[in-house]
Image (cartoon, rainbow, N blue to C red; front, side, top):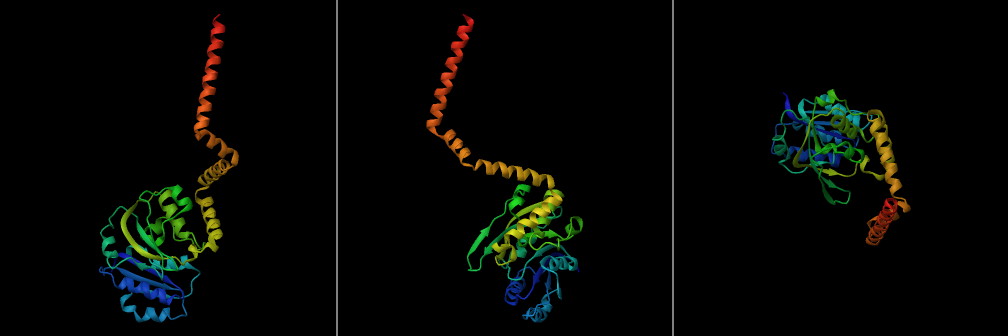
Length: 282
């Protein structure tokens, strides 16, 4: 049986988070979906939890993997749905009607749909992250769509590429920026908050920022070398403007006193010019 939507959950030794994720899926008012769980051979009881609920799960696998993106690629290759939604263990669907609401938007001709996410930090604080309707290369330079907010046509991975398993943190970002900015694949923003995104992953850890920046630069050098050079030049100009002498010039230019002074200088120069013209005529 083929499905319109496949939900893919990857997990490793996060039984408590996995149970929350599974329950948020099982509680949906829409039941026409495929649910896949890829577990990295957990030893904390996750495997037993999956087996206890296997009647509600279409496909599950528990075996060692090489990382997050290796597990996600396994999910893609085993999915039968037209569209895929990745929901990591610990993440939960925003409410019981999310799949019902989002299914109305899945129309032909669009490869990537995305909504908004509710960010939940380790202390339980929540913040709605709203993504723009128009995505640009400039947006992707410093930001991304979280993969929990996106619903991706399964065949798009065959057309673009699967997640880069050599990266630890930015393969989902790399996929989006290439699919949208390099291959010009059609996308659409939908006004639906999809998930409660638990902010405890590796990409949200400040310690890993240097790894993230290094991997992004490596990807840009591979797929967008000219854009990267332009951006480096722009950054140099921006940093130059931050120097004190440029700040002073800008402040003087915006100062009312400076404007008056410039006006006096200009009138003086015009007077000198007129006098010189009159002498030339004599």
